[in-house]
Image (cartoon, rainbow, N blue to C red):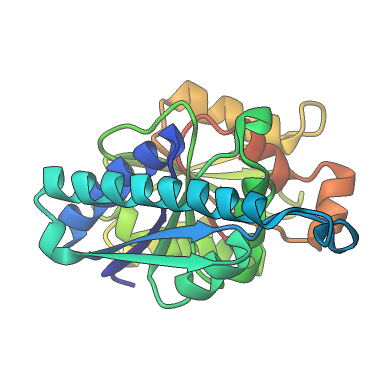
Length: 275
């Protein structure tokens, strides 16, 4: 896989600035086309109440959203100009549900860049959007934490490996980000007891691509897989975590407090997820 097109979500927030810094750097490093996308959410008024809302309220909402989208475009244009990448960038805008639009537009890109949710500080339209894009887009999603990202992503990477379709997909999707890695560690949590060399197939696969990883097995029965991964990332100083997203139905993961959801909530470095 080569990285030749990057879709980045842009709104009028500090989160967008962090995503733009990453997307523009990746664009330059990989000679990739960068697409900025801003999505205007529909007015959130229940149908039964809509008839009682004066038209000037709708007009004020629309004017406010247009102002925010103009600010988003200005931020995108400035980020591309600073990176010297304005000739290799493209601006798009749409109206609708954020996750639906991002997923649809993202299917035409090699990578989607979005920012971590920030809880109560987020606008309503962003609630749960990254989760749904990971599930619905069919493309790898690079999540940028609200603490920011290092200038170079992929120098020290941790790969969370399990014998699943999602992990295999994430591993393959991460190759462009790992091509100049200085250190890659593959972690298998709670491998089967009869698996003498867990991660051997992964090491062989990466070796074919010129990457010689370190293989680690960890037992996470007491602490939990998500905490084990986060601790490993922190201890290793990793600048990228690669993992499959939502191996079970999303509703089951959310009810049970799944690993994917926990990582998205508590991530401390950029995370590449594929479903």
